Image (cartoon, rainbow, N blue to C red):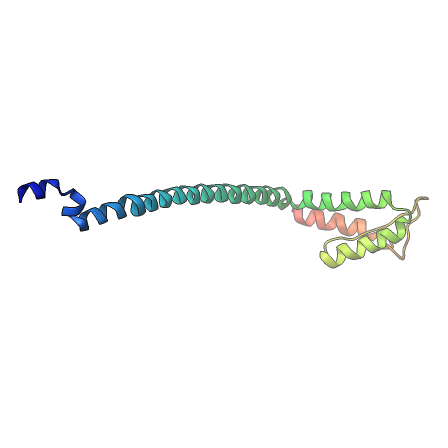
Length: 146
């Protein structure tokens, strides 16, 4: 009888234990390795996404800081308006359209006076027809300064 017990392999003596070993070696261990690999891939994607988002936030913050200075922002708007007028074939028509667009977008922020190529003020396009706007702007500036 002892001879027979010695000749039996471990899988025959402990079938449940050998089945669990096979399941562990060929199912659970590879599944764990795949899980660890996927976890690393997801972490790398999350870090990459976070870095990209931080870069976008920094770019937007730089833009906001650059345009938070009202004078710089107005300067850029008026520079663009001037460049468009210089490239235009009909500056009066272009100025009228751009002026209306700016005044709709930023009400009560801009007052325009338009002179033609001969240095004459075009009254139907200008917001101010007399030179009183210079006195008004000077008074407003002095009021703010005081």
